[in-house]
Amino acid sequence: MRSSAALSRYQEIDLGGRVGSSDPHALVTLLYEELIASLDIISRSIANGGHLDLARHSRALTILGALESGLDYKAGSLAQSLGQIYRQMQRRLASARDGNVAAVNEVAEGVRNLASAWKAIKT
Image (cartoon, rainbow, N blue to C red; front, top):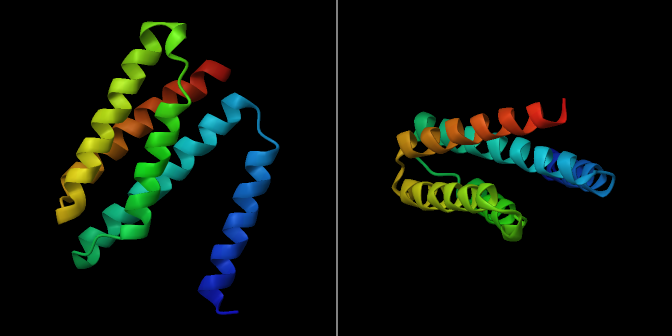
């Protein structure tokens, strides 16, 4: 197995183990961490070579969709507001397909803010 393929497989196994043992709060934290990691890779790939990492771009959009679909809209206006934020982030990230690093960084900053607030809830 090539080293990159082996690393990828290890990361899948590690992520699977972390998801399987997570409470709901920890699962959302994990999604935020994975989303930030993907956005950072996208940003670096654009900045270093001008090429969008399509696999990470797709992963980031999928994670944003998962975060949105996990919202309980019956819980009130906070869920609705988060849903709107996630949809706006998806639109902004989709606009980065042309290599717009500023759009990627804007989404990453928003996700970092959400992740920080989410972590503060648990502590």
